Length: 221
Length: 221
DNA sequence: CTAGTTTTCAAACCATCGTTTCAAACGAAC
DNA sequence: GTTCGTTTGAAACGATGGTTTGAAAACTAG
Image (cartoon, rainbow over all chains, first blue to last red; front, top):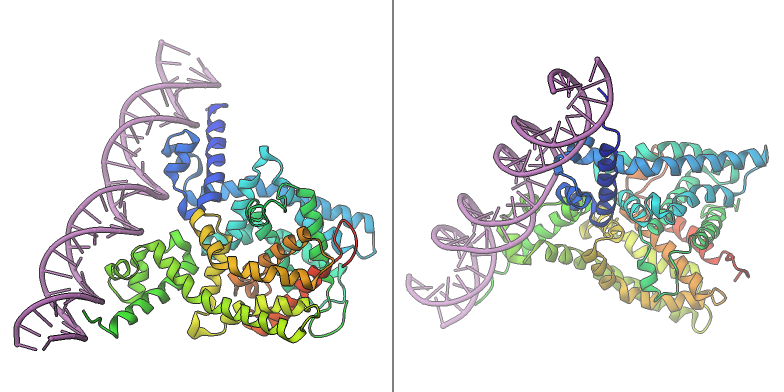
């Protein structure tokens, strides 16, 4: 009845690591189970034995990383609300709670690093039915938790406008997360994609200004 | 020696239309030549006969639409520079020249519509080697033309910050272009993705505020 | 009309895909 | 050591992928 305690977990991890890198590089359809298991140094049947299917493997690959990130987001948000008591929270802080944990993940090479960021950005931009549903499943709670806090931080902004702006925020996040090196190439080394804290600062400054902007139909909140 | 003048162009167009829709919906790897040609109502060999390969078909699909959009972007930018003479151009106008043509394309159902926007957003978010190169090939000129105008519109913003912010702008564009219906679903119908001019207004307002924001290291331009 | 080219078609080719099978190897419990 | 559930391995399955082939069909030119 006892399970083998060492080897199975190693193969699971090896498969997840290889899947993370290959899904990020080639996309869901572009990465093959054969290449994944080959890179992981295990038999192809082991992947289906441990995860059931390719789609389930992708799901496991995402969950392994997104879980902790989302937990830290919620923790930061709790902290913000605790500190500001009844007063209205600063948009900058809320944005940072949303943006920073994901971006910081990119520096922790032991926990996924650039590969997973690329993967996340790719999944976000994928209009495929299944990946779309997977997205909502992984981020639905975050959306429901952050939305009202944003609304309290910007009480004069109509809900429609707020939704659009959060949509824009997600676009900036996804695009910045999806690519860590292209900008360095384009800017000929001027922009450093490894300066995570610098990027967080810049994103928060940019996004906060956008969130607080006066909106087409009228008043400035 | 003479070419059949009517039918071949119809098949080419049918293939391009089907490819546009399927590449957008399923991605490059996810869309099959068989499905594309089947949807187009032509034989599968016709695609390889007219375009040579799947990759060349994608390239043709992109070129057909991007050309006119980029031309209008440059036209609008010329117009802006002509009107403001030596004075510094308004960031809002420059942003609109960059953003509006692509977004307006989505309303012209005869010229591609939502399918192509989805496709473009997808290509942008794709970290694959070939698609990345294809992207730079199609948008390199636009970047080189817009960059200095943005710099003149925001003279006090250091070039590094400007590059990052343009990077953010591209993220918002790509994400908004890539998805026309998801937001409607999430917002339970509150946000209308078909209100193109409204979206342009909102994006320009949001992005202009972000571009003009004070930056971390110091002064507000 | 005929000759010659361009375009279409059904079929086949060969590779690769995700998944399954089933027997061998393994590890812990008795 | 024997037993039993867990994990791995090589091979095969059925399906689908992009691409090619060679002949029929459609067209233009003379």
